[in-house]
Image (tube, rainbow, N blue to C red; front, side):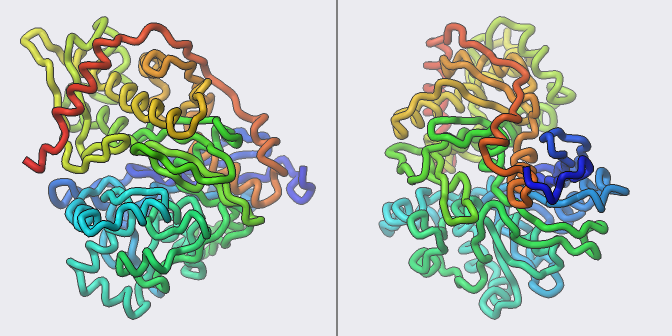
Length: 500
C-alpha cells in the first residue's frame, strides 16, 4: 500500500451522475462504502423521441448528493472519482459555466434522419473503422450536428470559442474545477463518434465529417491519475484532486473487477449494458456490437471491450409504474411476476426509444402482443422481466461469436439486479451462471476504484480484484425455447414502425 494515505480516515468520494439521478459514495481503503447519498433530477421530453436534461438541475443534484454525505468529512476526502451517463451532449459557457441549451441525452432519437443521410452518403464503413461505433442517434456527434443545423444562435458560440461542448463528465469537471479544466477521459471520448480508436486521439477526419471544431472539444486524458482538482468555493467546501473518470459502463466493468480478457459484466440501469473485456487490442464486431475503450492507463496503455447496449430495461419497469400505473414501485414487480408461472403467451418488446444492439433500429417502437381476456398485470410484469433477460441474452450470444470467447460467468449489478427472479431468468436465458455483486452500485464503486488508483490509495488492479464480494450465484435451469421464439418474432414485428 502507498504510505501517503495510511490514515484509516482517508476516503474517496465517488460521484455517479446517471440518467435519472446522482449517487454519491464515500469509500474507504478497504473498498467499503461508508456513506451514500442520492438525488433524483427530472427528465424532459419536448417532442416524440426527444430526451433532455436541464444541466443546472443535474449540477444541483450533484451538489445535494455530495453534501448529504460529505458535511464534516471534507478534510478526509483524499480523491474524487467521477462516472457519468455517456454520449449525452452538453454545451456550456466557458466563463459563466451556465448551460447554452438543455443537454441532449443518450436516449434521444432526434438525429435518426441525420444518421440515415450520412449512411446513404456511404460514410458508415469508415466511421466504424475509425471508432468501432455505428451511425446511430445514440452517439454524441450527430447530436452536435443537430444543434449546428437547428440552433445557429448556439452554434455561433461554438464557432467563436465562447462555448465549450463535451459529454457529461466534461461539464461536471468544468463545474467542479470552477472552469479551470476542459477534459474527458478516453472511455467517454470513445463514445462520441469523434475519437480514433487506433490513434487514441480526436480524429480530424471525423471532426470535419460531422462539422465540429476540434477547438471546442475537451482534452482527452487517462481514466486515472491526477486529472483535475475541485474548487472548494463551488464544490461544497471540498478541495481534492480528481483522480478517476470513466463512462458509467466502463466504471462498472472496473467495479466488477473485470480486468482480464474474457471477463464480462452486465449493469441493469435505465438500460442494460453488457461489456466483455477483450484485452489490449480493439476487436471489431461483425454484428451489432460496439468496440470501445474499457480503460486508459496513465502510461498510455489502453484496454478495450465489446459492448452491447440495450436502451430500455429498468426504464421499462419505471414505465409500468409511471406510464401504466400497474405497480407502485420497482420493488413490487418481483412478487407480482412470481405470482404467475409464466407470461401467459404475452410478449413485451420495450422499444420505447427504438432498439439498440443487436438490431439498432431507431424506428422500432414498443409492442405488447399475445394479450387475451385472461391477461393480468402479473403477466405483463413477468413479460417485462423476460424482455430484459432476452435482450441481454441476444447481445451475449453475438458477443461470444464476435470475440471468440466464452462467457463462463456473467457478473451483474445495477438496481434491477436485486430482483432474484430476474437473476434466475437471466441465468436460464444465457445458460450460464450469473454472479451478483454484493455492492449493486458498482458503477460508483468503479469510479472510487479509479480515483483510489490515481491517488495511490490502491497500488494495482490486482489488489482491487481481491475486494469483490458476491451476494449470490444463480445457476441456469432449462430455457423455454417456445418463449424465446415468441420473443424474436415479436421483436421483428416491432421494427420499422415509424417508417410506416
